[in-house]
Image (cartoon, rainbow over all chains, first blue to last red):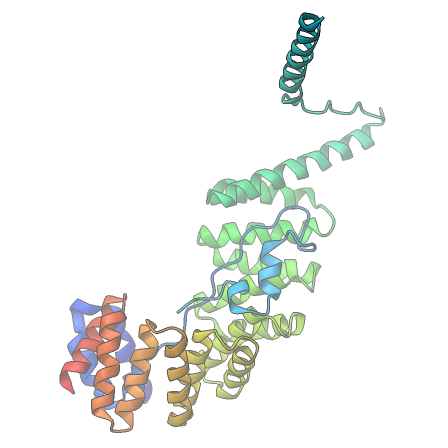
Length: 77
Length: 270
């Protein structure tokens, strides 16, 4: 039942503003947390030259191993 | 005498100007003459040259999003079978093109091969996690994310990817640990606070969730999804007036029309 409810909420969110916001609100008033979605999937890292991943000039490998979100190119919201 | 000096100076300046113009021209270096007449050595040199040229053209194609052309170049490089690091790199680059061409299974196989050839290839692991997450294959995403964290334990992308896969799969303990580590390493990253709040909400720890959402909104005041989440936490705890303020804030900041419409409707019902 809970899975069905979450599925229904996800469907409402997917349908968008014009199709079913009112129905979505009705469902969310009962279980508001059902309308929450985790943040976005990270963007793909770009191409690498034939020099390979080692070395300072390989931006994708540097992003993949960076410790800060900005240097890693993680989603901003 | 003065006229001679003036003439000499003018000559020097004219010569310098001409020389400067000539030095501005550059000519490519002549291709070195073959040092062998051995057929095998010449074939190896030609093969090496082809790999080099196709790599350069493939990367340029990808940079201008011509994925079909890039795929053709990297497929040929793989047939030519260069040694490492070019073997794993060609597979990584071809996978990138295949993803954009919609060939996701082929891309996943190529990235696995790249990681098999070079087990420390963090960028290949990162793209494979993203690919599995995009396809909703959580089991595969989690397995690769574990390998990515083993390659780069402190990498923000590794922690984020594994945390996101765990959160979507309902593994709250792993998601909490990864997002906590990420917020510890980069406290200014609002999105990690938001995801951590979702973990705590699912665990029923609404006070902790609310604190994380308030942190996220302090760091990123226009973060509409965080406002929406804060509204839901407050609503769940019976604080309707505060929830209404949060939904109103979301309605003002949301760029996603579905989220905005939902926030407006919830606000107006409270």
